[in-house]
Image (cartoon, rainbow, N blue to C red; front, side, top):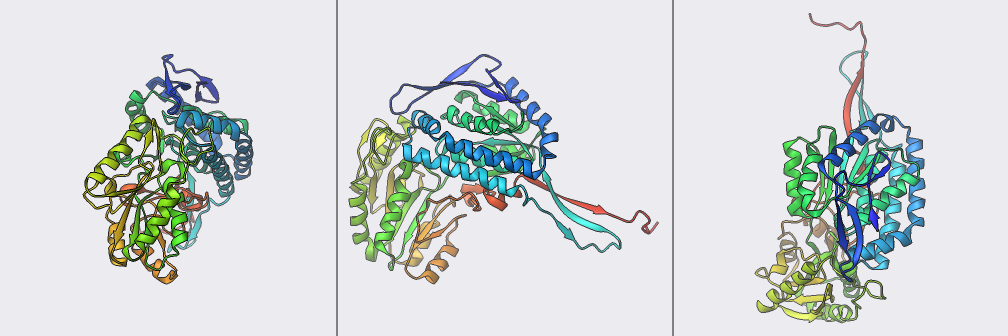
Length: 481
């Protein structure tokens, strides 16, 4: 499949004529061949977005909403095409692809609903005869950088609210799924989005630093949002700081699932299985640390290990729960984490085997801080179980990480769980549910090394608009001199 750039409403080859290949991680066959954008293409995309901004920012909320709602229906109709691309480009399973399309379509609908919620306020003024207003206006050209792991959800999230707020957008597609990301723009174009409102750049992996730097540095780019690793997020943040560009960053995670001694054990097992192993653990909210009170640990671990051992893993085109990891390097990292932990005293209680890019659902019990899997984001199906002596130690371990995105607490005592949740350093916390959960209207984001800013619903309006103070005054007012 050949993937073109989208610039000013037209499919384009890269100005240099270069392309790059994305290989199916499971079959090792060609998944897609995409245009490798140059700096000349970057300039063309920004110019197109800049030219389209004037008219789009003045387009009424009803028209913007209608386009986004139509795009949602079109996206739903293309679930088979999205699924094929996600399987081939990223090794995802069909259920994960289907969920991506469903939630992404809802993100478009939520963004459409927000077009009439971009409101301001009248602020009392001490100046007689003066009307003072706080008014939100579209910021300008927005750069969106989206990852491969939940490609339809996260790329749609990166562009939907900026467009709803009256901005124009450049989507820098992930090198791992150019076809999947490009199809999102096709959906919006078919829905009637004017030329230049969305532009898509695909680039060869080796060109990414230069492409991203040029995009952020361009004077016409006014906002940046990035979802990806904390390592790259720091580079994005530094670059945005250099050019004084506001950034919304949703980065890595090491989500703790805290299971207190009065937890519903079966409920906690269900949440752990889903949160830890959905999409092979390659989700920013994936359960990355299972922290369980020692008083119930033996019973909990036995049930969890039995469930994990029953999860089928293999060809993502088959009837499996765990498909392919994104690359062979990612799969080999899982083996390294297992070897390191077991050498230092961890007990392998489920899984542990790798076949190519497929790794079984794996649980390591009795994990301690000197093991890599304790602190490193595995971003795969290898999960540590950490036993603790009581609530205070559970909270300390939950916060013993550079990350702070999602978390969860299990307890039958809701007041107790609320008190624990208040002390966990994370942007998201679920009580008696998995760490893995997302809805289009919720304020989504993290703290600490997991980034800053919020996607989702009304919270995102502030990220993609400028708040201006505008007054209407008495031209005959008195001045002191």
